[in-house]
Length: 419
Image (cartoon, rainbow, N blue to C red; front, side, top):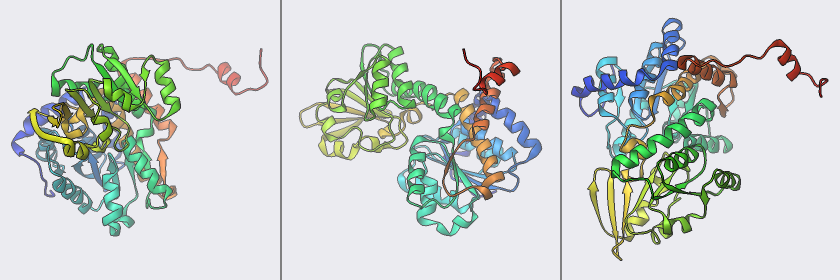
């Protein structure tokens, strides 16, 4: 097998148990895996995946491998790797993995280069770092690429910008746009796991705190709802008037970040943009403020500005950096500003990743079958695929829904019948 770079192979047994536990909550992916084992729709296809190396991702890798793919996995975030899972994939599944939790920036990109050395035909990205590096520095590999998939809001934004500039050299399916991904993964998964990460890092009581959520997309909606459920007084900040109005109608206070910064106890950004919490926001925060990010990149927090403002910095507990300002106020940054749900916790629950990774597996199959007829742009997940995954999830949950009668179908397709 190819070389690999992980923390320690001896962790493999613990990783195997963690992967098996996650698989119990991933019945849709298991059904796809069973079909892939029979049909081998990815036979001989070289795939490079740049994803969070978690137990859920491991089950996706096993599904792709069952479908015949020759797959290599690298981390899409320096702090999101579960080292025991990486070890298990290498030792038990013979899947090359290049990922170590806490790897520095140089190692992170060395691992991405290892994924590209695999000369992939299909890319599978989470944040678009793999595709971006490919386009910037490894253009000689582009003729090999059939297409790719992208998991995140952040990545889709980057890829659509590339396509708009005429720079995207192959078609990509935006898995993030699937209803069975963003509606459930982002809202329920990010909502729960982000709070899990904040609580594990700080051991703070959320009830009674003023909790500021930056962004009211699907992730922000879920986080705001879950924080309110734990008893927090929730403030939402937004730049989109429609989303701001929705937050107000959902019962949350809405105000500019500069005002929220003065009263918040806990802050979390989920926007996909840069410097959402900036120098002038840090300048007015209360002593003891907790600041986290659950967007894909840590650029949502202007940490370099805070570094310059601070008189001192120390690690007060795992994943909690305390910055002391010149006036004595202390601001705490969680998980180096990286995805807090993966930095200090375990990421999304397996049951929601079941649908997200079902989309990834089926999108890879779709790309292999259809790449020749696709343009060099970002495509949404086909609606029939989205509905198929929803149907499989309902079946696995033992839930049935109604079916239209022929009379009802005729009525809905007719313009002649009215009152």
